[in-house]
Length: 108
Image (cartoon, rainbow, N blue to C red; front, side, top):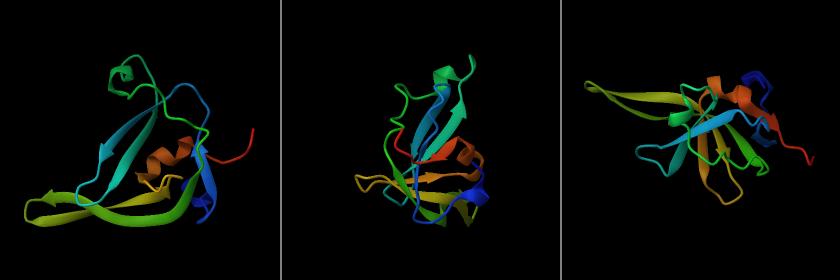
């Protein structure tokens, strides 16, 4: 999927490709998780979180958002992320380059 294809309010899920790994990180100053999705290779398998994420869970897309990215010297850095919400109410932020591993939610 491409970033331009995302529609606010629609349901999405992680692609069902078994080679997709993920890494979850905390966001400073917010109660949300940053999610990195990538194709597993021999080199990056040790960096991935196991077991793989459940791709049967629908996420609601809330649109792009500027979030706190840290401090660079004396300046605060903000980053543009894509904001999703899980059914349990937890927020997930995904960067644009990882959207290619997201698919529209369908009942397969």
